[in-house]
Length: 445
Image (cartoon, rainbow, N blue to C red; front, side):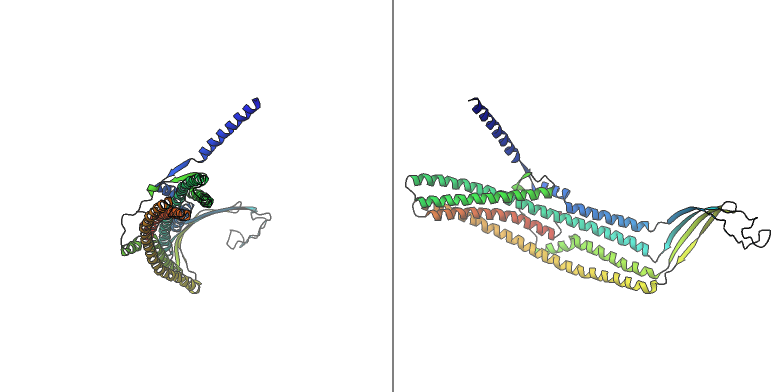
């Protein structure tokens, strides 16, 4: 008896702990669309990569500016001479005409020197100035590309949120339908026991209930995967169960004409502005390549100190002047570089026309998809009413022995499918509208 009491207490304790764990595991986090977008932008790996690219572009701009600064270097050395060198001076030293390391000449065994040089470029055919301006344009283009990536992250987040909402709604609808189906099974079981319905009709009802249970398992699995996908996008632990706030999926009140969206896209799309900046940088690249045809001019200065013990000491050897350099091989080597830069500029010209055509096509596709989504909502709203009314009529007929069990079950399935289609259509319309805004460059607004 005592052992039985212990077993019962242990079983009760374990059951209680498992129930607590299940409750904790099923805790969900309410998620609005705005909060999802904020987390998506904050934790997006794509945007972090874009920010790194912006930092690289800014560093390249600073590097181009630094090329305009003076170059300076300092060098020095200590030299040890193990053998007495032969020194032949070609100048008079007060004695004979020359010396070659005889007994009267000092012994040289070491030497030290230091050199400091500085050079400031003042003309290089405009190459330095073109390089700075080109780097600035490319930096601005990189920032615009990063901003365009931000809009793509927003659209991806909205799409993932809509999928999460659709999968959650599917679970709720299937659970509701399963509860009704199980109640129908109970009713038919009692009717079959009393001989009111045939055994075959009971089996049909039980089979439908089993199929709904399988549908619920699929719906719950899809919801879990959608929740994990959303967690990863938002930087949340993947075990976090999310409850999407349906009120966040707001339908658009009105839309503009397709011509207005196209005009807005041509003025607001970041890709167009970025491509224009890249074209300016390419034009400067052509000028920079042609700058190799010109000589370079620089202001130079230096200082030299030399100490050879017992022989010579040099201090205050300061020099200052202007240096001119011209690479003669540029006359036949620069031509290919100029042609390459010109080809890149022409490529960007072609890309601009292609980009404009693609944007117009995107606007038309997004506009038509949104109109289609609105039409689907209207049609499916009627379908829900029709399916609901059809089930009501079929149920009345069945109660009056004017319809079969198969007719009743088919009407029930049609009603559930109509509700799922209507729910999905409303969520898809929100996604379609935001894709239209993105195509027109208005998503940030």
